Amino acid sequence: MRVLNPDRRPLVAGNWKMHTTPQSGVELARAIVRAGPPDGVDLVLCPPAIAVTDVARAVVGTSIRVGAQNMHWLDSGAFTGEISAPMLAGVAEVVIVGHSERRADFGETDEMVNGKLEAALAAGLTPIVCVGETESVRDAGGAQALITAQVEAALAGIGSTAAEPLVMAYEPVWAIGTGRTASPAQAAEAIGWAREALSDALDAAAAQRTRILYGGSVSPSNARDLLTQDGVDGALVGGASLKADDFIAIARSAVS
Ligand code: PGA
Image 1 (cartoon, rainbow, N blue to C red):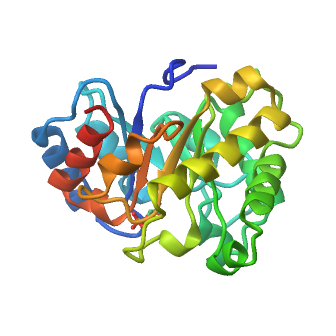
Image 2 (cartoon, rainbow, N blue to C red; image 1 turned 180 degrees about the horizontal axis):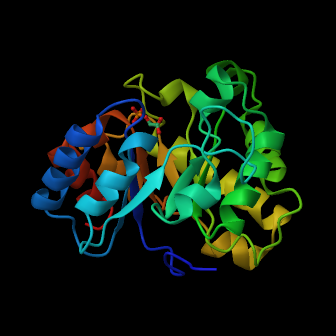
């Protein structure tokens, strides 16, 4: 199983969500290459599925990697509209699993997330597994319990060797697309909870080598404060990843 980087090199991933066509996606990828990806940080672009192939071709010869935003947990079958890990494996290197928009808007359960993670790992993809609490859960004091439960459920039955390429993202639902970010201290605390849960679900060494990103309204103006926190290994960026200069500015904050 390939590991992107065993030393928790910072990773900044752009989740383009349902934005860009294959053509405008290629233009955005080229603009990101022109804007100058900094050394010392792994950059990943996650365009819509239909643009993955073209964007992957557009970044050939650069250090940028390409990922998908979702996939099915089975390899093939009568699942209209779905794509599977083996289909992605020849084209993408990374896949986002269990994003809160998938969980909330498309009924994705912890069991599905677990199946998707298993399938992604089996296909040699690097999964970015998302966890995070809603505002009401946080207000009720349940954030740690929920994050712990999500991590445990995602990793059920998956051993630390199989999970080696795993990347996680802590994305508080209340911070996604809202312009409200978690404070750097909140992000670091929650990522600490996720790492503790990883240690229980896998083992301490696996928890230490797993990169855990922060996501939720990351922008060039708040990235440095968030990404220099202990244990915050990078960012999963939505809105700001659609602007090449903003995305690269965030990537620079991860290494400066
Ligand atoms: P945002 O999205 O940066 O637009 O808040 C982050 C995400 O959903 O991954």
